[in-house]
Image (cartoon, one colour):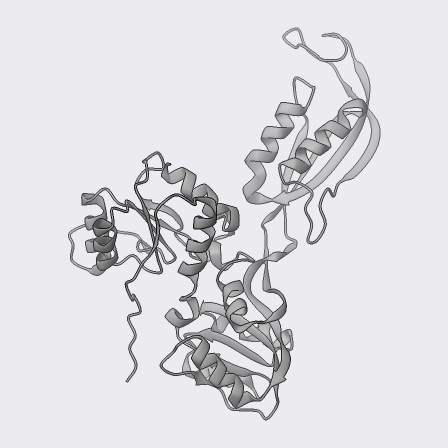
Length: 364
């Protein structure tokens, strides 16, 4: 079992292409070819977590937050980041981070928040743009069905709740091969007209290599005519935050008590009570003040996230109840999510949940 085997499985639910541009995800320390002795899953890779990995013979730490975020200019052990990285390197321990790749997954951080709150009818709060690509290719009519099926098998043509989606136009293509060509149909040096099908399919950007591999492997022509473009369409099942509903509406105070107990937080900072029951709830793990307007636009009765600043509570404007449960508290179930996902795949392999509390904030 190599690090690549483990991370490939993580990237089935959190492809690195889902991550935000500012983020630093993937393998931060180590080599993908390294054989794994054990995996330790944590929210943060601190020095004490590296010690825990050493004690339990785990040479791969799967962390939600990236310990290396803004870049390292020195490795002198002068701060907690440098000390953790140095200790990991000295002890041949690899560090892999998912962060916003898992934030944007529809089975990721926010989905887990919805699950623990028992919200129903969930959907993505802020669908991600720029993550859908479109492939257009031209293939002889007789080979079109086979090529389409192979593209579908690679993951092309999935749109929301539908799969095997494509658009097809029949026409006549032309080509003439030079003296170095080896045409599948026709002869070199002669102009050839061929009945062809233009096939167009969309796909998630992280599948591009796999889909193009199927295209080249199953297209009969020596030279494959194709184009790939990035679309600006929103991807409804990928993005930040989620929104769902309680089975029955509850009182605002009851809601806040539920939130406090569910997220096991020392306190819940919230905006002014507005005197209406709560049924529709938006959630977003981590620092989520940027999505307040999205929650209001989706007509959520309440929005649960973290790291709201003083003036951001004014944005509620008596239209929504804002609840700040704390950064760590909103993301605390993420490591359980990752452990569950990995243990289902690697049933006879050591996948450990870190016992270290990495929350830097305490309440009195």
